Image (cartoon, rainbow, N blue to C red; front, side, top):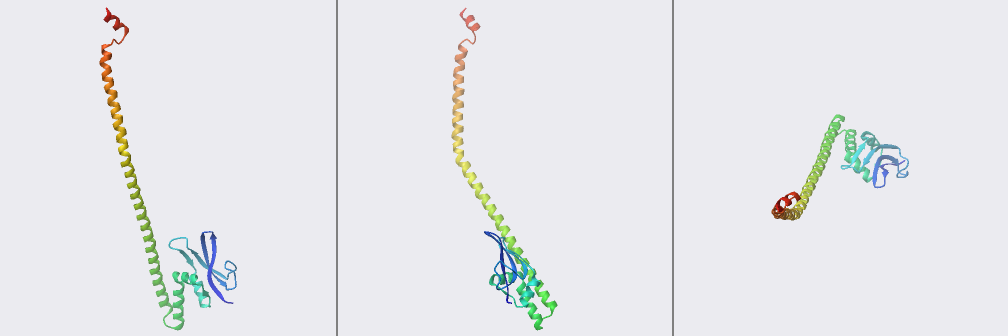
Length: 191
């Protein structure tokens, strides 16, 4: 029975989520499988991959053939490296301890690369937010500058109205002083 290591699609429309499975070649894409080896989520950046490395190596040693995409995922997560080292141990090129040491060094290097990518993405996102904030401040400043002349015109009109009202009030005040304020004062003045 020929076995393939391939992806089985799950998730919803537009948001795929994959299981990495060992399945019979004749089985449907999303049908029956022999063993679930892990998951792959391409919706995150960087993509999230969780694999059973030892189980995947066991299937590769037993002759399972990965599809192209599955091979890339297995290579990214270190399964192909571990399989390669296991072949070297079988042939006597190195000991089990040396192979494990090389694999752990490779894993640490890979984790560092992934962390650097995450840091770079978060830094780029922070810079993009800062640029957007600066652009928004510039637009607000331009709007304020454009609205400022209108406000100045409105303030000048208000000042002119206030000055005109003050002038009218001062012009009316002497006239009122000349005119008697009450009827009693008018009667006294007539006498």
